[in-house]
Image 1 (cartoon, rainbow, N blue to C red):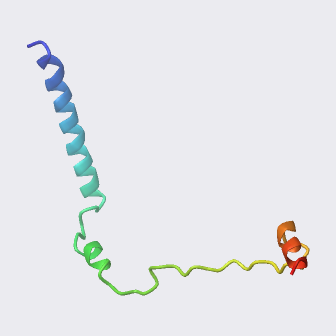
Image 2: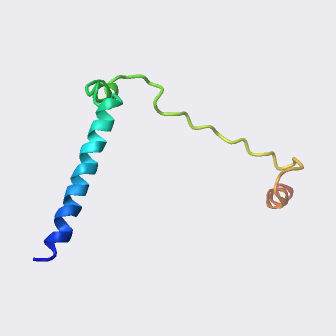
Length: 76
């Protein structure tokens, strides 16, 4: 029974924080437009997926090429 002296005030504190957070969010306009974000994903923008860029590989005779590629080019 003595645990209720701890649990009830703790529950009231949590509820008070939740009510404060809701009032704070509503005051800042977080709930003004609930439809547009849901419909935004249905638009076909076409630019949503970035293109993959290919990294150019240096030629085997280039000075920046790794040693292993130089060795392979000389054996051919």
